[in-house]
Image (cartoon, rainbow, N blue to C red; front, side, top):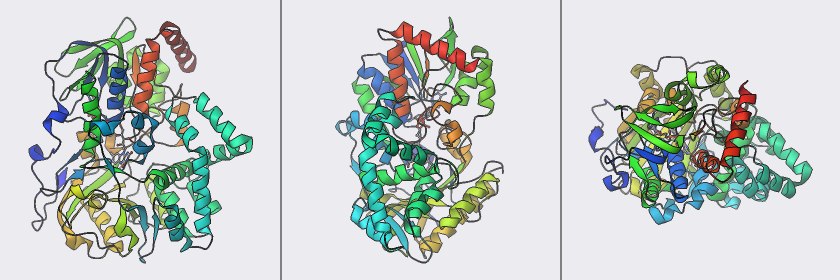
Length: 560
Ligand SMILES: Cc1cc2nc3c(=O)[nH]c(=O)nc-3n(C[C@H](O)[C@H](O)[C@H](O)COP(=O)(O)OP(=O)(O)OC[C@H]3O[C@@H](n4cnc5c(N)ncnc54)[C@H](O)[C@@H]3O)c2cc1C
């Protein structure tokens, strides 16, 4: 992370004093066991969910985390000015709040409280207008109606359809591929024609979806901005369902944040795991998977020690790193190595965290109430931005996702101030030197200034995270990618992370992929970890031998 060098700004807290989570919530247990039923590598949300699912089943679990604090990309710390808490990576959790997996963990009992900004999300335009999503559907409809008559009702239709498909759809998304039971429920609820419409939505570009549904720009902006939380371009197949899903979740559950910072979500998962008897070891980077007798038998840590896994190793690690670096391609079918050569990362990211001495002076009244603000582009600007990324040109007009954390949770900074951040995606290719990163951070700030004149004058502290900073802080954020690999259709479902089964089982017996590189991909929903844990439990259950033989045969067929 690069803190600002502007002498007018107060310096960021030194790194050693940045973490605000109480030590007791991130116990470093050095009295390490050298064997366990399962070893989980990586304490990101997926590793933490997997570890919780396994202790719930009565397994003895050791969770090994490279960093000195658990949480992966769910962390917070004071990095701008003392008293201002910043979420270092993820910040808003509609997926977690809606995820049957996370809901089932009852994290409220372990210290998690969700809070919400008055408005969910606003797309701010330079002329002062904004399209605003509220959890009250009538207020959202009124905002969109101001862009074009009839668009309010069009939004209400979308929201009503969402209520119809929501439960089976979330079940289908968050269970391993193929989601037979949930898909059958969807089919029963929607009928054949409705299911075909949903299948069409699954591949529809968001730009087309917006044009089909709305006459004005308001609804289109909301759908497209939400789609751009993934790395799929507005004209790309599959962007429609991302935009629709996130917008509908926003309408339904809002974009909640943990009171006290993102770290509180991670800490609640740690506490629950430890209460179940699990052992977390932080500062414990894993360097290799121990392969013995053709199966994953444990892990080797960077200090040379080993932890043996009697039943399973679950890896909350990116797929390329897991297979190439931790396992070694010599233990895996040749075809997997070739498939990994085609693995596509999602775009790098530049993030800026700010301490502001007062609220953001938005032109739009509604934006003042929103937790998340989208800005920097209009409807066509989204396409230009995506084209820039595609041809590896640095966007002159970046699409910016902006978080007003104190608006969402008053504990994040002193009363009357704001702890804010923004991130934007940048192309792969150019070397992201500190000069280039600083230039781009200035572009982001200029984009905010255009919709909130006077913003610059509110800044009293700034901290910039380059793509390399993101990866240094969390090895899974390779090159600043935030979602464990592209969310494009060619790397989804049974094509994720490489063409195969779309399941957490790997070609190596006893090894399960638990990270966002696995289906269903990025975002804090815990499903990748949950699915990996369920697969490990099944492989060790009553029908375990048959399941393992089935998985082996399937992989042999797929990778032959
Ligand atoms: C800037 C940014 C903003 C985001 N915003 C949102 C958002 O608002 N909402 C949302 O839902 N999602 C958001 N995401 C995405 C979300 O955070 C990720 O998809 C999610 O954290 C993935 O979880 P994970 O457990 O798979 O991996 P991670 O969270 O990346 O955790 C992986 C963990 O494994 C550890 N690890 C890796 N290798 C090893 C090793 N060899 N040995 C030991 N430990 C290891 C890492 O240190 C890390 O702690 C954002 C991500 C970023 C980076």
